[in-house]
Image 1: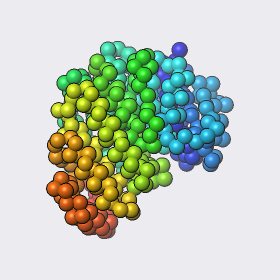
Image 2: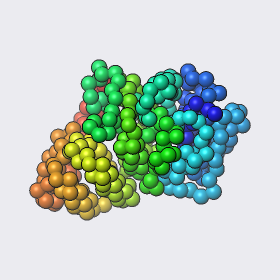
Image 3: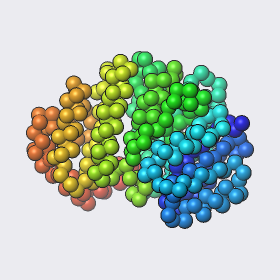
Image 4: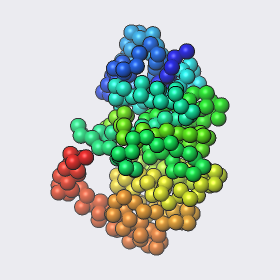
Length: 337
């Protein structure tokens, strides 16, 4: 049995896939102890030939070639879970990469603890610069999280973590068939089922790349906004079911940030989605607070049910955001961090 099975959902990533796979080859952990499951979701570019080379060269690199595209990462990931043989599971998106010691560091911790999941922080890589977001004091190196009383881990991603495979299978934790938001639901189910989760707060082992041609979840496509709102309700119901409505404000203040980001790139009628978001936020019985003041300004009008005003303010701020001065400020902000 392998110590770790790494599952990679793959679709049309010929420009990035070698970087991801090489980050596994460069791990400090013995490669013989790692199983790599590459699930190709019927790529139409040169991706398949690239992963075939790795499959040929390394006996523990296994590929599945789907006959039909599933349109999301969830189905390939679930297929990978089903055929995995490792004691622990890790996930890697095909345009991201691991730091060289990530597998070893997370494996050693979960192996010698009672935690079902060990997570780390991540680096957000943007135009050859990076940023690390800390939701708690960055000087705190490690914390234990209990779902009965603590707040969920800072990242909703399933990729910056190592998971006990037996625990995942016995609790039937899978990725829902959504084109985005599946990580958040998977992680929330895991949070409530696990007795304990360990977070390496000041270790950013996962490199998350904001590639414009692969980061579809942040685009303003209608299906992405529809799915995001669906995800909000699924998460709300999960939290209610587990009697943790006390985390509504802090959790959704952080997670609903994505709604405003995606709406920035949406060219359709924003009023439709603002109305839906208003209904969702009202259902929480609390007013959310976002880390960016412009979001709070827009949200203030939303919560007064002044949808047209919210749209006008949103569009005005979006126009200002695209000016050269703001772009320069954003670059300086990344450099400082």
